[in-house]
Amino acid sequence: MSGRTLPARPSLAQLRLQARELHREHRDGGSPAAARVAVHHPHLKGRPPREVLAHPLKLADAQLVLAREYGFESWAALKHRVEIGSRVAKLTPHPRFPEALAALDAGDAVRLRAILAADPSLATARTNLDPPYGYFTAATLLHHVAGNPGRDARLPANVVEIARLLLDAGAEVNASTLGPNGGTTLGLLVTSKQASDAGVTGPLMDLLLDRGATLDLHRPGVLDASLANHAPRAAEKMIELGAKPDLFAAAALGRMELLRAMFDADGRLLARPRRRGRAMRARDAVGLALLYAYVAKRQEAVDFLLEKDGNWNMTGVNNGTAMHRAAWEGDLPMVQRLVALGADIYDRDNPFTSTPLSWAQHNRQQEVFDWMCAHCRIDLHDAAGFGLPEHVEARLREDSSSVDRRIDHWGIPQCTALHWAAWPSVEDAEGRHVHDPAERERLVEMLLAAGADPNAVAGNGMTPLDLALAGGADRVAALLERRGAKRAAEL
Image 1 (cartoon, rainbow, N blue to C red):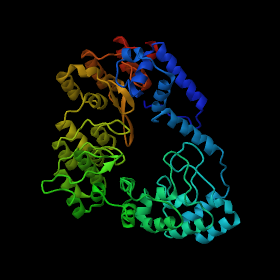
Image 2 (spheres, one colour):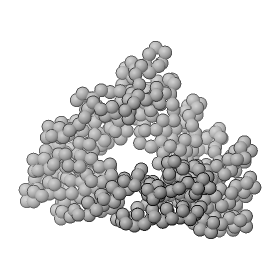
Image 3 (cartoon, rainbow, N blue to C red):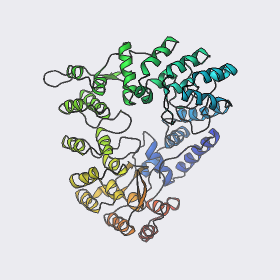
């Protein structure tokens, strides 16, 4: 039900062909093409199909739409991802890399030194050469001293000695991994929770810097990545080296004296942090500081900041707002505080385009889910997806035009509530759960009776009937067909 996924080894020629096909389908007036363009083209987003089809579309526009369907910001970024694969494909796995890595993991410096002496090329050899390509693609042995959450291996107690051994053997201190969002060993280290938890961040940073690694301690937000990735000791080490802690660092590190000093006697922020070349709005800065404090479990800072005037819908610490994070954790008191302060319960500004209610449901936080259903106005898409007929009825009474409102919701871009009523199941952390078919039919009937368009084409090119058939909801599919629903290919 989600967007497109690149194959393991994508072909740029095939991607160009897909873009040309989309370009042609738009020119020929295809509704599915219009729906796709309306989701992903920045100048046509949310426009009705007629407007989208009336707007001339260049091949470059079709390439942009395709790139964004695959999760890339631009066609150039998509091309770069394909080129990464081509570059990595030229590398050859070293037959003794697993042996050397096992010695590293075990902290066996004697064994590792012997392996490197027998074959010095191991110092610059690379691993993780198979797709899918992540940030640790084509990592060297030295990169592994920063830790990798994808590996079930703790950093050895003598990891600093291991790193020194690798550097002495010829490892390149500024070599970067080759995958998307890759980095040097120092770049990986400053975002490493494993190294921070193990208490080795500082000594490793000292060693790498002494051997020629570089780190800009004075750019705005230099501490952000460490704090967002649960690596507080990296942030503290950078402060020791000269980085200046700002509002977000004070909140995330729980430095209450510094945090209080950033506000005047009336609770106003004295200096606004700068990000992306400009000063943030004060309310946004306070809200983001709150998110940092909450994620870092700095309760005193959370309580202090919630007394200020903040935008409680800020994102920027990995995924979700503070309410998303609280709902996921099952922190009902925090959810209640945020609701009382006016935080947006409909916020979908996260990679899953889902609400705090959805996060609670997905992580099986039933107390939070039940409280929100009882005390909040659940929106039409969530109500249809989770099978909450009382909320469906209430939202339709309040605004009958909402029946065909299109939004990005979970894995379906620019969909209506009927798309979700037609889908027969719901997923959570424990798997897929099938709804009562009779309840699904009831919801579909309710929406159709309110005027829902049975042939609305979502941004993934699917109608409600397509979704019902894809999910095996035969009774819902039959009901939709009786009401004139068609597959997108038939429109």
